[in-house]
Image: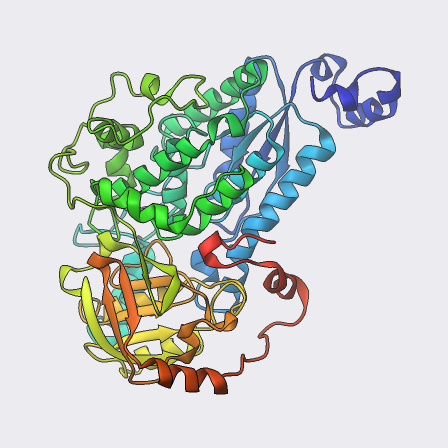
Length: 553
């Protein structure tokens, strides 16, 4: 066993004495040592139940003959961090999580790992760590939140809550209406109830083969989630015995499967940051251009919130990720020979799976659209690419040309939107919010929700070198690369410039003559760094382009 290096033989007597100090018995030390990486805390609704998940995982490990040993991973609540300096610390935690988990796993020589994440950066961070240490590992997430209900019976969720603020500033919702959303939008523990980033990544963890079926969709409050956790604890022992490792599972074909499921589900644009970063840890290249190729052949089968009015609990009842994957196999869109943590192939996992709700998971021949939920646009404004959640864009905004309204920070843009200074036809440009320029690449849920709440989501586009929450809808285009702080063309946009967005043809262009842009570039000076000390300053020096997944170099 790998753990023999910390527990076997006379040279390890000092090590064993420390295990005995923890209360472990000789019998427990003779079994495989399984690290249980638990992201429980008391500030993230998606993580407040993870202590219960961890106990169930540990019960499963013990039942299968292992010794579970729990240690923590951090997690940020993006909703609470939204709209202030705290959001600069969201994306950057992904790499802190990966690094700290690597350190714990290597320092203590575990034989296997059970990862218990749930929210946005926690899931990819732990997937990166699993790939990096490459010892047998399995994921068991905390599960999604149930949708809320307003007093009149309408279902609601966090994206509606953010949009309610925009409605308030537009004068279409009063303070009592805002409070009604406050009290009802988030009714249970779990990752927020739509196909936002957390649920997107939990579903893709299942699609890529690193979690048991049901991991992405079983609600947090269901007993089935605890049963899943016990089975994950049992399954890690089989993976250890068979020496099945993350890089045996997360192959190039598995990442292509994950992107295909991503397109069918209509996942968050943040997957275009996280999948390349995870792939990088596996030694797999996942360029943005490939996403459009996969999208072109993958029908969009689901419209969960914010693209529609259905939620994760509905997807679970319809058959979950497995039912979506089953539909995709009808046109041979998945590599079903890929190995998974079940110890079986994708094909074996999908035997007997049925789509229980063809209204929610559209049959492969009756999709919402013939192409996938995400599009990567290229053009002079984004030579390395930018990303939009196409499935959440109104048809009338798929092609849009309008005047630029330019802001050098999210805060300035929010103030203008709330003040009613953005009008129909505008293209809001928010820059110097990228990985380096932010630093930290803040999510722009507040401005996009304000635009939607004011009823302008079918009339106004938003472009940024920052990124978006999975709860964002509308013509919201993020990850513009190169970013402004690296001298990308977005830094040279001026108020009133015409910008042409053509999502159907994957293009985005600034309609300004080259000689004018050359004159502007000659005068351009990059603003000084917004942060000069601490982790964010170090992050800004090391982080790569969003086109590469904002990995640290």
